[in-house]
Length: 407
Ligand SMILES: [Zn+2]
Image (cartoon, rainbow, N blue to C red; front, top):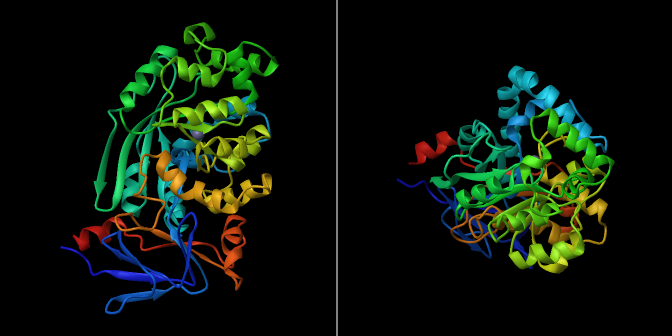
C-alpha cells in the first residue's frame, strides 16, 4: 500500500550545486522524492513553505550519538590529550546516569533540524533503533579500538522503506589500532564506507613520528589504557602513511578531521578517491585548527561535514557547522560548503544519489531554511553563513509509526 503523493514548494529550491531554482516543487511519496517540477503540480496536496530555501535533507557525516550524555561537561579548550583524559574519566558514570535519555533528545534534535542521514560512530548500536523510529537514516559505524576491543559486526545496509539503517566498520585512529588489525578491519568493511579519525591533533602526528612533548603525553595516556606504542607495530611515521601501509586508503575510506594534513597529503587523499569529514567547531575547540579545506577542494577531495559528538560541540546543528566553517575560512565558496553538508556527505557515506540531492529516487526528509527577502544571488551564501530568519526545519519526514501506517 502506498500513501498519496504530496508536494512542497518554496520561494527557492536548491537541487544541488549550480542548480538553484525559483518556485519549483518537490513531490514526495512514501518518503521518496518522486519528481522535481518547475511549478506546483495540480491534483495533489501542495504545502507552500514560503520565503526561504528548500533543499535536500543534510548529511551529518560524523557524530557519536551515544556520547550525548556528556553534553556541556567537558568543553574543549585546545588541549586534545587533556580532553581525552576527561572523556575516559567522565564517560562511564555519566553515561550510566543519562546516556539513553540524552541520546533520545539528540536524535530528536536531528529529526527536527533538517538532517536526513547521519554517520554515527558507536560501540553499542543503541542509537540505531531510535534513529529508525524518528525517520533519520544512519550509517552506524561500529568502532574498533586497540588490539582486540570492540570487534565490529559484519557490514550491511538495510532499507526500512525510505530509511537506511546500515552497519559499517570504523577503526578509532592510527594511534590506537595495530597495523595488522587496521588492515583486517578495512577488509571487513567490504564495499561500505570505512571510517577512521585521522590527523586530528599535533599530539597524534608527533606520537606516530615518535617525537615531541605532545606525542609523549599521548603515549603516556595510551600506556595507562593498556596500549603500548611498540604493540602497534607502526609501519610509517605519519598517520596517513600508517593507513596506506595497512592498505586502508581507498574510495570507500572516510577520513575524519584531517586537521594536520599537508598539501602533499591532500593530493594523496584525492588520488585514492577517499573522502574527508571536517568537524569545524570540534576541531577548532580541541586543536585550534581545521583541515586545509581550500587545498583539499583544489586537489579534488570529496569533503563532508560533521558535528562530532556533544562532548566536543555545543549542538548537533550542521547549519552551525557551515557557519563556523565560513567564519574560519572566509574565502570559501558558500556553495562548496553547502555541498559538503549535502552530497559530499552522501558520497562519503556511500549513498551518492540517495541523499544530498533532489531528484527522483532520493530519500526524504528535505530541509527548509526560512530566509528574509533577498535577491536570488545571495540565497546560498545566507544559508551557508547561518543568516536564517528562523531555525531550519525538516520537511516530509516519516517516523516509524507513519511508515507502518503507510505500509
Ligand atoms: Zn569522532
